[in-house]
Amino acid sequence: MEPDSSDRTSHLRTDLTSSSYIPADKDTEFLQREELRSVRIGLELLKPELIQREEGIQSTIVVFGSARLQEPVAAKHALYMAEKEAARALNDPTNRQKVAIARRQLALSKYYDMAREFGRLVSSTCQVDGRCDYVIVTGGGPGIMEAANRGAADVKAKSIGLNITLPHEQHPNPYITPKLSFQFRYFAIRKMHFLIRAKALVAFPGGFGTLDELFETLTLLQTGKTENVMVVLVGRTFWERLINWQWLIDNGLISHDDLGLFHYAETAQEAWDLIGRYNGVPPS
Image (cartoon, rainbow, N blue to C red; front, side):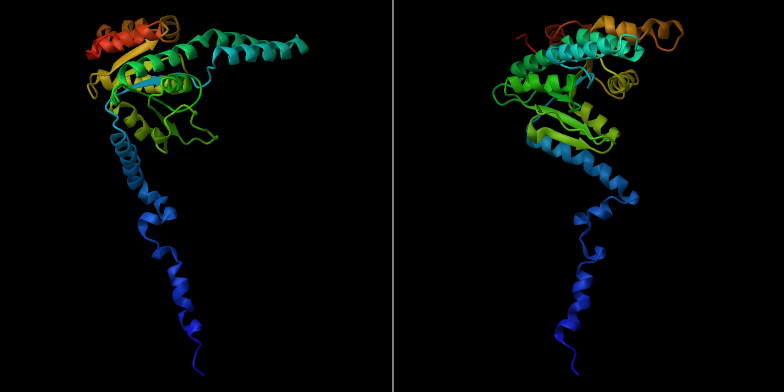
């Protein structure tokens, strides 16, 4: 008996659905293989670069700071809730510690407003007549990062968010320009994008992530691997209590000249004035 035509071609249809038949650039499972890491790294470097070119991004200012610092209203509410909880168990040392931390967080919440003001000031000064100079770029998360992106959004300017995939769920803050909201898999490539167009790095009080990015940049400047990036630390009291620079000098671990790799500022305007003078930007 002559085989049915559908029987004769069934194996062909099966072949067409096999992974080997999917074009390599469309095979997402294939692209996740360990051997394809170098390809993924190259794509992760290139994609944001091309998009920023298309969006006309000429230069940036990187803003770092804690993801945990809230705006003052939210920080006040957090303190209220901590005190309320502590009142229910007056002898609980954990609750007392939470109140103490909440009070310090409220004191630090001024930096949220300062970062927002900085984003607004820089963006309104530099993004005029279609120019995209000194565009604010952050790690894309909440806290200080959100504040800087929010300041740019306040004046309807572009800003960039370089988010990172983490074991716990994380979302980009809502103030990033949608076309400039990126997500990275590799920290190393993300760090490269922070500095590719950077004219300055402004570090507000923060934790491990902020310190990581700060010291990476200082190391690159110290070793001459990058140039012409001004580093501004906002809040001298915070930074000098956190890092004993003189102790490093006294032990011969850095030179006194290395202190010239960064500057202090106490206000958004002071930070921008330092950056503007360094880069020859006319005062606003």
